Image (cartoon, rainbow, N blue to C red; front, side, top):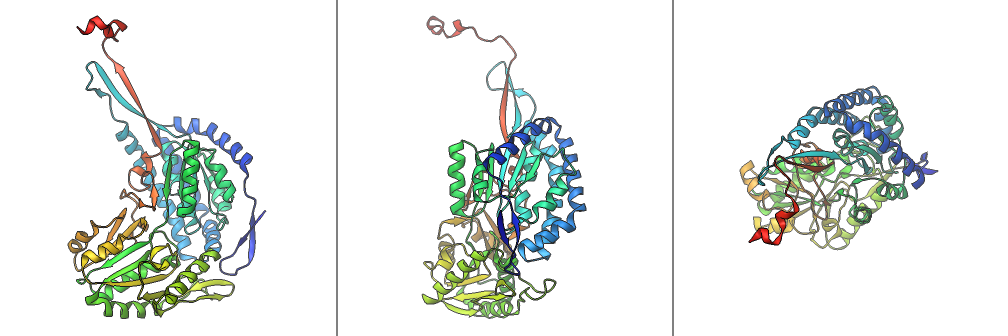
Length: 473
């Protein structure tokens, strides 16, 4: 058994029994058998089953939300996760049948005379999903739902840091036994075993673990979708209103206590507006309320994973020791056993500091000043990551002119962290932020198919004599 910590109390008040490799192999065999019937259903029938799953999740919504609230230490976003999962099921059930028909296409003439061709979509039989702790339900199912719509069976291994939601979720899944989905308790060894038992792996998490998953997938000769870390920059041009920009930067940096891949983690502001921007940002940051004493009140909650608090504190301390100026926040507080950090604003930062180079995953806003746009773009494009970015300006046109110069898979224009809300825009992860097809847009579904070409001979198949030496004279 494995003990699980409560992020609000610090107590180890829950335990899980991680599945080992033989148990995962047995589960994989069962799901493969179930998948054959599931894949044979018309896409419209699978969509109906997914809508039944949506209804089951709605019936269990209170229990799932309650478990997520304990898992993560925050309540409002837990409710949002459950509501968002239902919307995701709505979306894929609605659009998947049409996308599949469109991608399949009709029989058409080939460029080779006498041959007609068509394409058949063949789903991967079994997809494995390994998901992280920051949005436990959302990221467990963001890949699983389109995979199911495609006709795959799915095993999800969520993080062992936040496993309480699994039981109420699987109670909902059990009400629709036609859907070949299993969400399992597991640890790192379970995740490694899962990669060896499936035909496609979708992973969300750190770069270091993602590299191990990529290597394991390569060894198993299976495809992988890897959504990894980020160090998302925001550029604020001189034409932006500084008070407005401060509000956008604050929200995009600290929602979910900054524990989000798409959080803004570096801010570059034009020197002309730097002083009023910083004044507004510090005032707004100081007004943010910790959600510590009453879970029904406050703006940001505790660190979900205790080790992450140590990482964030280490980055802040390193920055200050190397000359950064701390304007507000800066110290992790232990309240009722939970670990909290008030929004932290730093200036005087340099690209070499860990707080500007490494993923932070906390409510920290390091701010650097630039003198021209070329300098800002070069700074924003520095480092190994390229998940997403943001540009704020006096007009969308001015922001977009800079956005297209950034090495990032998605750029929010006159907003920040929009990838958390917009799932229908296909994007790639640049640099160390990931590999494989996009989970957003149409690719979110179509990546789970292999394409089989059907080539029809409408005339006479050539005899061997057609390739004889004297036939070519």
